Image 1 (cartoon, rainbow, N blue to C red):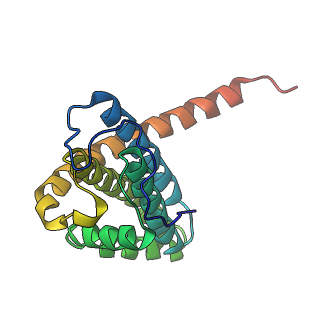
Image 2: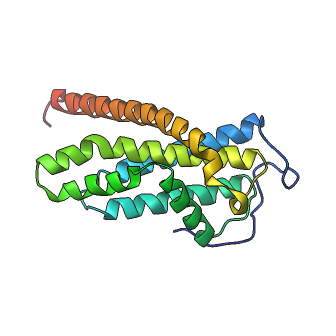
Length: 193
């Protein structure tokens, strides 16, 4: 799933090593689309009714996102370092990761526990994935690499991006619910064959 490599693949757009690429609209749009895809994936996975398995899978999805963003920006990637940086970033979420684990465990309680978990976990995991992705984009666009990412310098930025991510994830969830409602309504209105 996530390959470990220390060789930087060919970036989507070639820039000098360490050069800031902030303002490269095409690269930023590609990165934002990748982040969006991984936000959707983590939100979907968080609805799986298996406690803790969902969070392990979300970590793997986020690691894959970091790998793909590294490739996009032509930055070296290693699974071990990526895992370490993700763990460090998770620490900046002020207990959110622990809270998400507790909410995930609520899935063990039939009915109410599952409902509580499904009410908040998809938005939280989507927002966290969004914030993590945006940190890597900012760092890479400023010429940084996985090796020199200092998570403490991003503490305020990650909190800001988490709030933006919550709004976007909530919006995405509402849109998905509406589409499901419309599909159900359309299926009911079709005459039986």
